[in-house]
Amino acid sequence: MFYDPTFILLIPAVLLAFYAQWKVKGTYEKYSQIACSRGYTGAQVARYILDDYRLQQIEVVPTPGDLTDNYDPRTGKLNLSESVYSGNSVAALGVAAHEAGHAIQDANAYAPLKLRNGLVPVTNLGTTLAFPLFLLGLFAGLPVFMDIGIVLFSLAVVFSLVTLPVEFNASRRALRVLADGNFLTAQELPMAKSVLDAAALTYVAATAMAVLNLVRLLALRSQRD
Image (cartoon, rainbow, N blue to C red; front, side, top):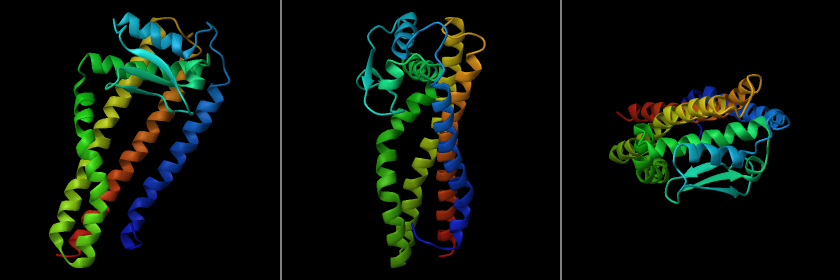
């Protein structure tokens, strides 16, 4: 936003974010070099899991890019990056099972996922307008605009907080189905868990950044009272 003494509040989150990105990249690259002994590809595992949960209507499709994997409830598609879709590495299977876990959450009306999906429109609005309104209020001496900016940014914080249980739950589901379906061996499961844990750390870092930014806004707002 701009420099002021409260910027120091963000330093822990910035450091955590850098570490999380380094960790997820390194962990994924490491375990993407290890082929699963049973030879499944990410697309096959995702398809098997979805069919087992009677979700045959959900398509498993490749999508461009690296680590661009996602489940889109609007289109009913499970999008897997090309290296995950056709790859047979331990990392690919972990990621594919994780995204299938989101589809299962959606089918089971998992409450945190429903809440997160419902927050998407207001969160997008909040992240777009929060800082401009706050800055307008700060520089123009209009506290009401600062308050509106804080309220809008709070929606982004809530979204980040709700995202954590959604992602953690999807990873737990992924590891369970990979074990129960014998897709990975007992030696390979901890490797997949390392990949998913590293990915989860990026969400923790994003949440920390959002929370500390909110604290910063509140600190700046208090200086105007």
